[in-house]
Image 1 (cartoon, rainbow, N blue to C red):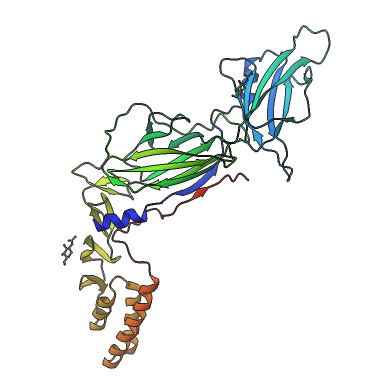
Image 2 (spheres, protein in one colour; image 1 turned 135 degrees about the vertical axis):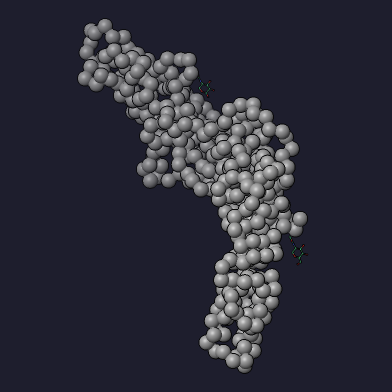
Length: 414
Ligand SMILES: *[C@@H]1O[C@H](CO)[C@@H](O)[C@H](O)[C@H]1NC(C)=O
Ligand SMILES: *[C@@H]1O[C@H](CO)[C@@H](O)[C@H](O)[C@H]1NC(C)=O
């Protein structure tokens, strides 16, 4: 029980951001879908790009353009709260015969929460052709800044019940057995939002029976976006043991910092089967016998490293067999052939092997009864100093365990 307590305390806030790439889901640049819509050599729109106004450094952000479902020649785009306005760039094709006309090159300003319809006309360059002018509409809106919804959230190797919807704030996430890490892949609604992850203490058991109600909620595919994309994609991570559950909270602070809202995910991971009840983090499989140097911990359901790094077979704290060249002395593995001075040292501080080894070298060089006493004294001082600096060892120390810390993820688009 103490072992669980330590492990849980250590893992209380273990969130880590590992990656930021960027793509708005379902974003399509018109280049992909306009040309096929009208490919018979008649005039049509070839490219449509929106950019925010340049900031102080002269950098303009791209704004994703999406086709409006079920409507021809209609698009929509959403400005982040901090984008005061936008520019439109468009070209028509075929280039020698067609042009975009009446296009304003000036910036269009937009208040937070407002929207406007931008019009684009494609005409033939020469008068008198039979080609009728084509009209395209782009509904450009600007976020109000107070939104606390995220654009999209997915967890690798997990599915949500209910399925993801920005306005729904509570989910159960069913994680595959093989997934040691809970990787949240978040796409913000507004790049100005800040997302912070908090993982509560994990508890044994999965209280809700797994029901496969829907297919995997995968991260949106990236293939639909060409070139730069507006939204930053970020990953937040925590850990979860087999047969355990944990509530993960994503706190979203709005772009104008006026509001905060939370998403709650109860993440559960199924236990290993009874006959193979320990999860081996290296092979990502359940096993009945753990590898050398590891033991099956019933508290966490994992193969966990022996406390003594020279121990081959152990039961929790107790080592029963050491690796080659080491032998068991008073419950600790020490280099074979070490004298009584060694035993003294291992009593002073078992598990501080490097100090014991240094000490042994010293022994060999000095030799003699006087030296044994002198160096044993030195060793106790040495070890006492060492133990002050060392972090107290946890009972459970797992090599593949995540470092424990919380991470606040802020908007950081370059
Ligand atoms: C433009 O988009 C905004 C936000 O999605 C919507 O509220 C508004 O009704 C749209 N305007 C038109 C004319 O479709
Ligand atoms: C370890 O050994 C001690 C005494 O030597 C014993 O009381 C304890 O139950 C053992 N622990 C395990 C997990 O075997």
